[in-house]
Image (cartoon, rainbow, N blue to C red; front, side, top):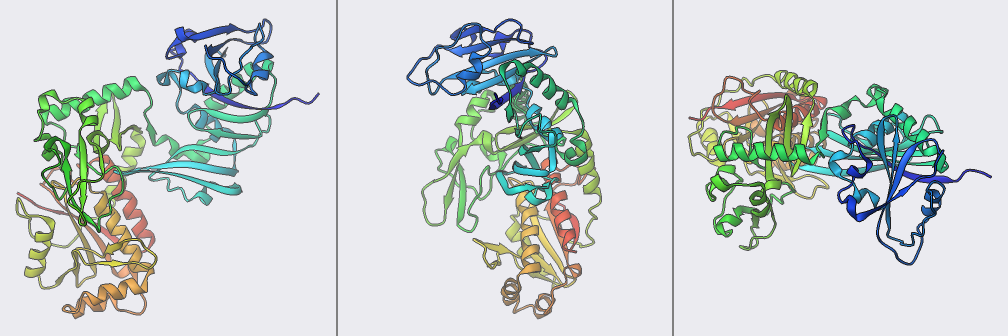
Length: 525
């Protein structure tokens, strides 16, 4: 008789685990079922004490291996088979069994690494990714047929792979595998083959074959260890209480409709006071920092107002808005959109090297005044420097776009598209870097957008002529990222890593379109 194809969901548990029962959040609430003798591996089946009306399909597989047949009859039941082999514990979950496990004991890269080692790189079917910037975006992309990585539009400089689905090179592993925290596969298998299957998967996990095609997955990894996350949270609290952190700031954890945006406010002030920008100092000034805790950061909310109403609408936890970096036990960690990440040292050095390749701009701009907002600074510069045209707030819509795009803040007669952001008052620099890319792409691709920008320059005919040429030549323009900030000996390496990551990515995109890119620090007392 042909062996049945069974779906399996397998997790590798950390080597620190010494007893199967310790893998569970509430072991006393579970019933342990011993396995038959002479099945080729050690293990136990754990079930919650629930009974209902219908037997799940996966009971047939488990009944092949337990010493006493199960009478489990709950369509929503859960089960976890702990397999001990190769001196490691594996958890094979059924139903909602994964919820029974202690999450901090799961080897979080097991499924992804096994899948990447095993899968045919020409036969990928689906990729889940997220973009770790000051705003974290989650994306799933699927192909109708097996395809290479390039088909999915993954940007390996900033997109983090969460899971991958594809066809293994060796069909004995499974017909198809999906690897994330767990490894999900469909395989022809009997219960007695589960021990050998786990042995095989542990062997695949130890390989480095994935480095040939997918080395970037090691650059940045999400932290799922609750103990480590707790340690990092305490470092955050210590820094915020002491006011010693140079990297912590606030950023919006979700998209903002900037064309209608009016103000931010904080629940700690009853949402009464409005602020044009997110500023960590503003929030900390509204509370007793001596009693600050993670619970308070989660409870306190940031709200937004839009121009069509005085009512505070969107609200999210302050914790989700924090961007923070710290070094702990020799590793660099980053908090972004409520998630902790560990960043590989080789990757940080690569990004630092990329930043060093961005030249300092030759443009000379005056220092900013201590309390001068960007709009006032841009107006002052354009009024005093006659070769510079003001385009700040000069937003125009790109063909097919949902919102207008600002071309730049200042345009020089040399073709420098200057984007200005005040770091000391800004919630994040990501808007600065993304603005430079968005406007450069609009100028590059959209003739109508260029004409709209030219219409804003009627009082500056020489500047208008730069953009009015029938054929746009990106190589004639330079995107200048101008950051208003105090002088530091390590500039621009003093920028937070996430800002460096976004800047390096923006520069790479701009160079692909043949733009020149430079960085300018504007002094402020």
